Length: 335
Figure 1 (cartoon, rainbow, N blue to C red):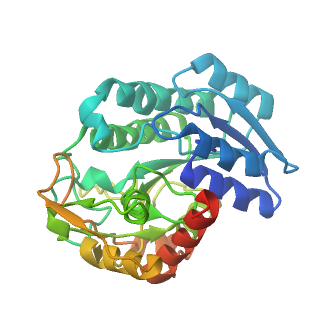
Figure 2 (cartoon, one colour; figure 1 turned 30 degrees about the vertical axis):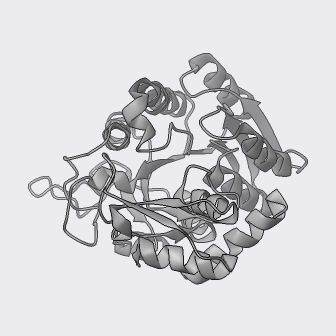
């Protein structure tokens, strides 16, 4: 297939592009290579893709409608995976406009480009942050998500609503994936595992919020990519069992689906740090701090729907995933 991947120089996007190329798909990468975090890491991910047959790339932002539409017209994608977004919960408190530009304006540009060019299936990144202040565990796609606690989460919930509108009005098949905490080699420097590793190796203390007592459904990158590809290959149609008298956010009478994509196995942050210490062979000095504004105390994915519809089966324990990350980090940074 011809697959357009936005955010192709990002953590998930670069891994996904590698896997699509390996199975024989043509991939068009689109990314603005912004400086939200180290652009040289983004370029290094991209440099692994550029020499490969079947890969093309254009630099551009989602909110640059002309550049985005030029990429669509040049490549004529059959399917699209939209992973580009302004990421990060905490940064949304500092720079809310960046989230509106990329995640709202940019996403409607994606929807319009797909609608007018007959794209077969749009898969897009939502986030576990949409569950906000919900306390019922595990988080299920059937749950109400009307109480976000960050603007980032609100933009991702908005994406789900916008996608449904286009599925309903224009018959565009869309699937939203609520990513839970993704980690692994080539990961993001603003994420806990990367930050902790860097500081522990430098002999510096790490900031541990909520005194390390919150839990996350840490999901290894290979499991995530497997789930994204399985989803991409499963084009949704109208759900014949959808009941408008008892509506669920997860399906529709339109060709629309929402799934959690996680590990279905939450790990307490203190345990995560312990595993990292074992892999590094060093103890961490911890600054124990209260929960940060915008953060949720716990995340735990119910992935039953994704397993049922695509055969998704995450299999990487946190001990293996963290070890793989540490090996990559030491090799990449020469430590």
